[in-house]
Length: 308
Image 1 (cartoon, one colour):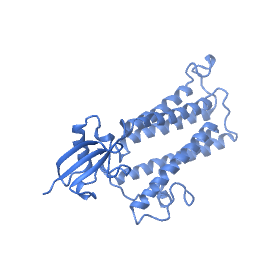
Image 2: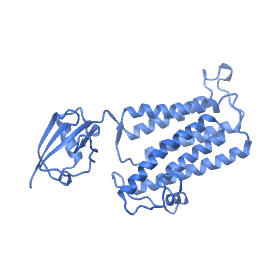
Image 3: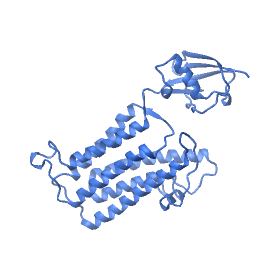
Image 4: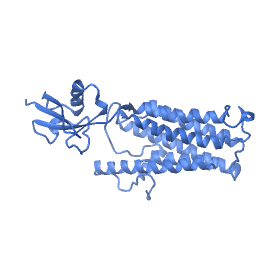
């Protein structure tokens, strides 16, 4: 059996960082990363990007050396992805923050609204209902992170946690301040508006959870297998007939319902910003599906049926 020699260069400076001798032909990129780490412990596997071209795409961990377009002496280029943090840690941090921050405003802890309002309670039912809905949403997200989601990538750059937390925590504080304010004004159309919005919120939360369960069932534990998601017997998953990312569709719907319920401008802005970001993600996933699966259903749109 012939062995490979693997030379690893810095993608920016072209400096030789490592030379691996007698590498097995069936060695994966993940195994090569581990060998590289032995000579450079500061660059653990998760922060390594190995590629065939200095400006090319990163090779996947599961890629096999002998299947790559290289000779028996392979040259790979290394880029440092920076300090990494697990997706689970990021999600738990960015979701726990809004849950706790909102409750601080709901209970009107001191130094927020003035001394005379410390630990007082709103007389409006919609304020209490909004707290229940907001808390339910983030508790659901935390539980899904722990027990439902299966991540194709184990880590993400550490810097992202600061950006994500600023977004989630900042908007949570902004909307909570106004919704729980002593001078908060209930929705224009009263109970009917609140009931309609609550119905939208609950249905979309159920839909979002149903999609997450369906996506989990597509990927065996510990696997990075990708399959085309299809509707199941659960009616909430039937949206897969029309969109590639119905979890985002339901998520946006939940926040639209919450915005109608509270009639609060910061919630509407949060919904808009979230919709823009999720549309970008949905378009990216939709393109990936089309590229990877030739038999991908042509009727599907990324996030909004027939439109977007």
